[in-house]
Length: 132
Image 1: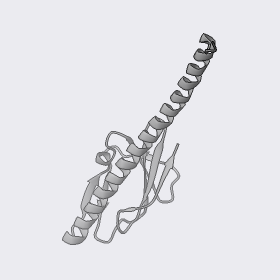
Image 2: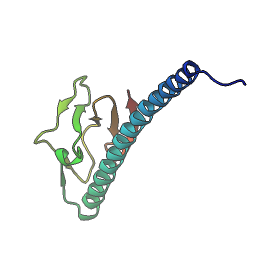
Image 3: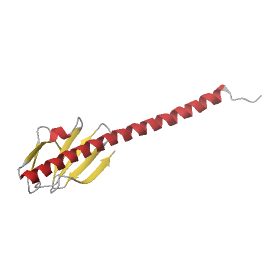
Image 4: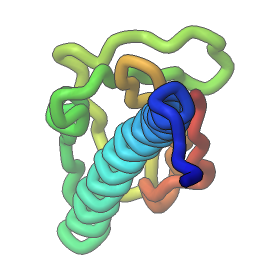
């Protein structure tokens, strides 16, 4: 009778475990990136709502940048700068005429980040990019 040996079975199981391990790591990374994108889209919604309130009431609105982080590390880069700085205790003031400069917000997890550049007039995102 022909049958598989114990060694052949162990080799097959080891290969299957390796493939499953690689797949699980890829799924976890995709999940982290998806969470960051969700946080960025939530922040865009909050900023656009604040800009809408600014335009309808003709009163400036203040958005606490720390509240946009949702537990992630959030940094901001001002136009003309190459350096991202912490948003701790920083506020974004939205005026009826729009922001005075485009800002780039970056949310970070342990292994990935998402950056979004704000449109100065609408407070929506012009660019949204993911980084590993």
